[in-house]
Length: 164
Ligand SMILES: [Zn+2]
Image: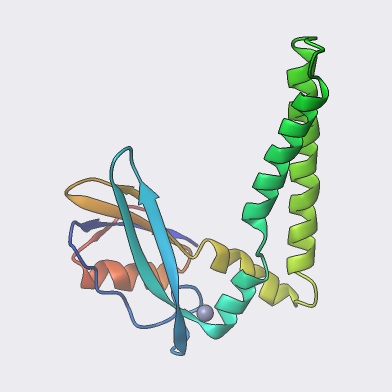
């Protein structure tokens, strides 16, 4: 179960010294979270263990498929150059690039799960979204954690409150 907590604004938030995803004590890595509004941004980091880091790293390439899909969209638009059959050119480019995105995404997910047990697949899904900043104001920051115990601990040491 995930948990959402609201923490009063501070420059630095102390964080529980265990893996933000699985709760392991062996944390050699960082899990970064980032959120931005129009002109401001906020980032912070949480401890991450070797195992969860490796599971996250297996999903690498997710940013690349957005780029490839945009290139495909642009390529199809270029194919229609000099042939302004609006809106068929726009619709075709959107359909082709969306299909490219979906196929590549399925491929990346399938590849990232290769050789993993069912338990590791569940942990991988959890690790990918282990923590995030949902919202922030000058007075408070709202975090969401996949690991409920971690969220409760983080909230307790920061004088926060549990939203849900
Ligand atoms: Zn972990």
